[in-house]
Length: 206
Image (cartoon, rainbow, N blue to C red; front, side):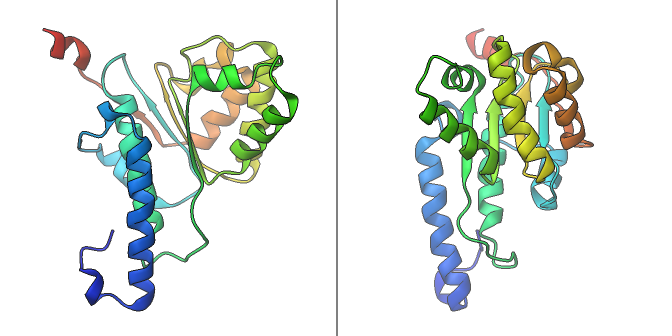
């Protein structure tokens, strides 16, 4: 958000400032408590936020290095950048966040068809989609087909995704199917960021 006080801003900047504060407060309210702690983002991730291109972001690395925490912080920075006065205003952003296990469960064929179709459409069209721990669960053939619907639409329209995963996109075929894995590899391009370090959970428990 702008560093100036609202009284020093133009009417447009002040309006964006207030809208941005409200959006960030709502985002903070739904951010899991453990991921609200401030952290420093890697340089590659800060560059991705500042780039505003169509590329997606893939955060990978061993268990416990902070991929999910980094992704939540990245989403917040992306949301903050959306309201920057210098950026062309295109309405409020639609940012969706899902754990892979919850998403796969929501896409199962035994649920209400209308609700599932609505969810697929929303995830196809939202401005930013964050899926956490993509390789955490085994997807059925049915779920892989729904994932393809979501990712293919985002791929052809250059709508970004943020993915956290223990493996790189090329090794996701067993989970997402080869078509999604291939698209993710191209969507993320040079924005595949490896986070390294010790398991932070074990360090806390020690």
